[in-house]
Image (cartoon, rainbow, N blue to C red):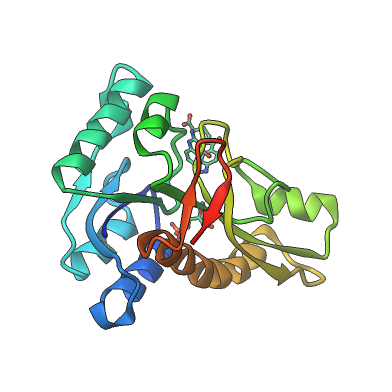
Length: 202
Ligand SMILES: Nc1nc2ccc(CNc3ccc(C(=O)NCCCC(=O)O)cc3)cc2c(=O)[nH]1
Ligand SMILES: N[C@@H]1O[C@H](COP(=O)(O)O)[C@@H](O)[C@H]1O
């Protein structure tokens, strides 16, 4: 399956997807054919270039509306023959129109155990809540933010004295295992999203 990855920043999750798909023998059934960033000059673009993956910057600030931006992204993905879209630290909310075009083929990685701590600043929410265990979640994307069917989760221990930074660093190591696993499930059609938004396992 041909994969498009949307990023906004450092791209460590993109790197984990690259590492998992670079060797056809690894059987992820996936090949990254384009990386799109809404921000220029981010580290993720360098990572894609180093892996000889075509990149495109589509600045959301250049579009009159959220929908116009989303449709520009949709056009690039379609032109590249993308079949599955991964949001890897992509920080723009997507319109319902875009989600409907890609539903069931659009996955995201969230740095918390959904449905807990949705939205931005998940680590800050976890620290403020005083939980001892957090983690990360790979899920199908629905219009409702961070509410799509859950594909893969893994827990991460919070240590005494953790800061948002130390926690993000530890959780990312787990994200880098969870996201490739989720991509593989979808790319090899082990799991589908049904009309009711539930997972159907093959
Ligand atoms: N419709 C839909 N789209 C998404 C886009 C990105 C992410 C990644 N996680 C994200 C979750 C929340 C945000 C957020 O609230 N950003 C601040 C506002 C930025 C803006 O104005 O756009 C961004 C990404 C998840 C979703 C999702 O679950 N559903
Ligand atoms: N959505 C969240 O944003 C961060 C992106 O990091 P990177 O993949 O750009 O390094 C990750 O923690 C991811 O869970």
